[in-house]
Image (cartoon, rainbow, N blue to C red; front, side, top):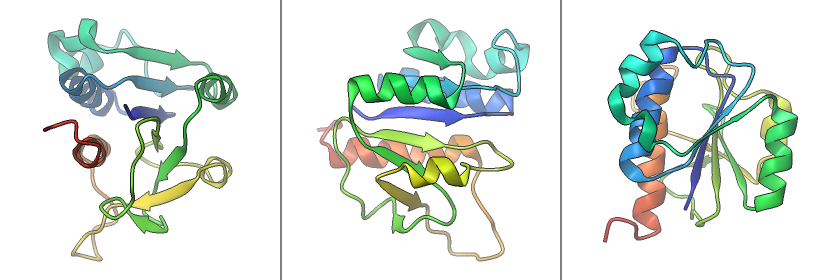
Length: 153
């Protein structure tokens, strides 16, 4: 099953909403530090409501410690960015994919994108809109991956 990876998330309510999505879909959530908040943050907990016990959460101190864990498990790194090469709707997902998302203000750093098997973008009709909210981007991407993999049948 695909896993969600947030690299340096900054806004607690976004991470809380993503945790809730992960709980609802049975998807593992990886937070890669440094984080822009404490895990005890009340806004983080409020956005995740009482679903935190149902989240398969792993916190990685740094991108290096995340890479070690990912390499041990295997699977492709897929980086989501507004400058992606392929639409998330057209990409064929695999069960062991890692869906990587960057911070709300900076996105994924170039060095991380270069390690990805593919970079994906979410198409938007209005060019004046730079990007979607992080929690929305994660949700639509995760549901598309799970749809393609037959998880909703």
